[in-house]
Image 1 (tube, rainbow, N blue to C red):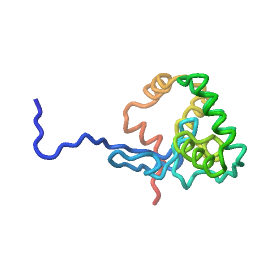
Image 2 (image 1 turned 180 degrees about the horizontal axis):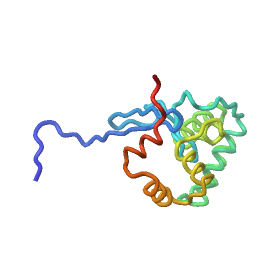
Image 3 (image 1 turned 90 degrees about the horizontal axis):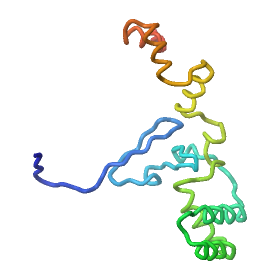
Image 4 (image 1 turned 135 degrees about the vertical axis):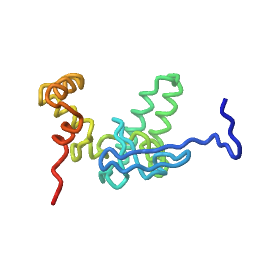
Length: 165
């Protein structure tokens, strides 16, 4: 059994990595916004400085919030109806505050440089290249690599870019 002496914390370390530039921010119990990052509705994480500058009208914010309420599976229909009515009559300032709270962890795709095809994340690039090359699984790629290269070093020499002189 392992025994720890001294200070022991229940806190946990959290890290976020930008799907655009690869920057990683980490800290104890850190939120995504504290790390200076955002996440879009499709799960892409990106630094706030990569976020697209999009003008969203008050009515678009209102409709977004209403749509989110309608998507709740766990809310009773009468509670959904109350929330929808609340958003329909909400002041501009309160609407903006609720909208900002919502988009911090699931911002609409229009803010995301990956969703808007201005950037490409590594996973999507790999899937695209595999499909273009005619592979459907990584196992197929591994089989080809094993047949083509005798050692891991030979494989690495092939895939690494040449060193600059």
